[in-house]
Image (cartoon, rainbow over the protein chains, first blue to last red):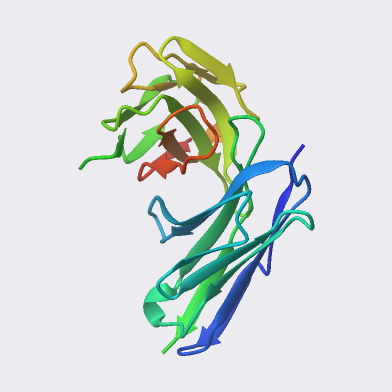
Length: 111
Length: 114
């Protein structure tokens, strides 16, 4: 059974600092990994999707890396802003139809 | 561009009551699924469907039923609500059963069972 872990559970940084969010998974046989953002009381917004054949994906200030063999992904957010405050979830899609989620990292960016 | 629409957004039920959470998508996606999200835990898969007329169980299916009579709709039924089913429920869809596509999520239904 795929286990997905996100450490730390919560993170507080001053505005302007770079954010590094970690995601690890136990079974490297995955098709892709997806990073989501969730604001309080809201749904999930997809940030980045990395296919298993890719090593990284970038969108604006966001960069996600994937090391499938070691079961790790990292989401980097450059020059953090208060608007980046949210919970960030990673999810892996193994060789079936079932996304497996981590519990998330709650980020607070202090102005 | 509606995407994935869930109704209602909030619901309070008494123990033993039944209800249906609605999910509809207008993107012609084949694959749809239901998750529940509880504090401190990741989203857990309840049921999923790879196309109209086809459903299967996920990680936590007990107490829930689903059907998929059309491509657009994937309702989740609670036959006899229990306090343990208090949670936030998310519906998701993907363009096809192929595994390389991203998932799109609805805004969630916050359910409280008293």
